[in-house]
Amino acid sequence: MERNLASHSVLRCSAYALAMTVAGVGSMSPGSGAHAQETNHARALSDLERAFWICDYTATTRRVDMATALACGSINADLKDRKFGGDYDALLAWWRLNKEAMHRTVDLAARSARTGNATVDRARAH
Image 1 (cartoon, rainbow, N blue to C red):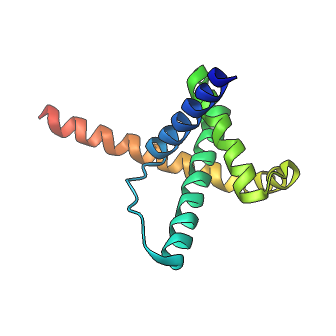
Image 2 (image 1 turned 180 degrees about the vertical axis):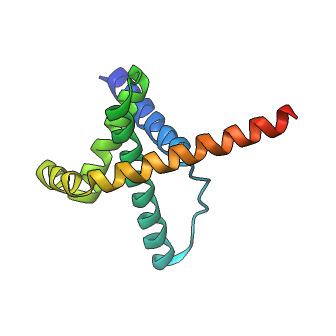
């Protein structure tokens, strides 16, 4: 049982590391007071949502490795619990409503990043 808890903790940490890396989120400094905590919680939820959409788009458009699939599964579970109080049907309804627009947004950002990287690579070559 301890081993399962330890591996679950590692998975959860990996999921958040993936989320923060994929979403391009920098470190967040902790605030003071109730307002700062609400702001940090809202920001963390928006980061979690962004990571969810990146995972969803990635899983829809390409093959993902097991580590990524597990991390994204943890992100999905965390979002369901935090945003929807564990209600899978509410998560599903939200996903259906927003999927098309969010996939377009992620695709556009990915294309922009690739174009930017190609420009930097060409500049380095000269």
